[in-house]
Length: 333
Image (cartoon, rainbow, N blue to C red; front, side):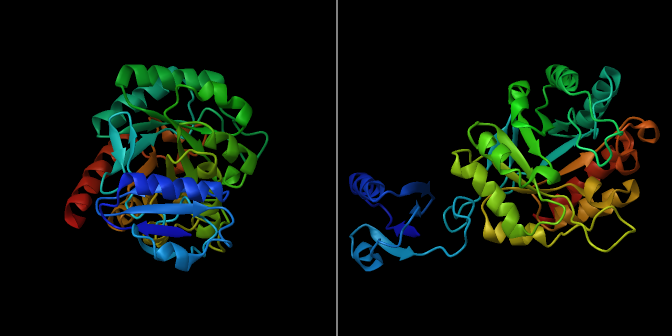
């Protein structure tokens, strides 16, 4: 349920109403916009008399929310959420480019890629230290050592870093990581999501391989229900019957998620297609469709990459793409 308050409602009356809601056992999410304040009520609202609320001097309207996701719902928070990560902003017209290797392999590799993607205009450096792989015999990442190399790259370049977590027990290793990524395979690892909700870290939440948008938003809700509202949603392709690409990229998810939720939405065309030559056209299409950012895999030697070399761009290819993305952004403005 949401209660839309009248403009210029006295703060004392708002505080009294919030206190009354809490006395009824409800959690109250307050969203203050440019023109109105919205109180989002979370919990059992069946005993709340809508007609009684609507006659209050400070209440403009009351509506019940039928969707199961509440905190992530745009009805609760009409204005786009803007998240600040280092010097980068994402959401509500602010566009962020995240780039780097699928997996951290060596100090030379991560530092070379970091400096080159930064020169091309990247806002954040991505790099996998813990790698969930389909085969137990594939490279699983450098783990804690990989995090240390990312932090070294951060110190040299000043770029915020993004890295994937697989287990809540690893959280102490991520204290200096700016954005914690939840991969597609862990999108419904609810115990992990709840632990991440207790942090103040920005969480990059990827859509699962076979999950719909409602399920993605419910996973975001798990994080937000614990108090952490710094979430970036990521479309990274879904599993379909198509075999020519790694996954099928769902660009319609961008405007649909933006209609349903206030959270920033980015696209990962690298995992979505699995083929380097398909990354640029899909990245440009995502930017044109209104995405708030892109996450792109870049490797200084893709042929010899230990993980996902087929979908990685070279630094020069990334620089060319970044320039085209900026031009697309200018057009859609």
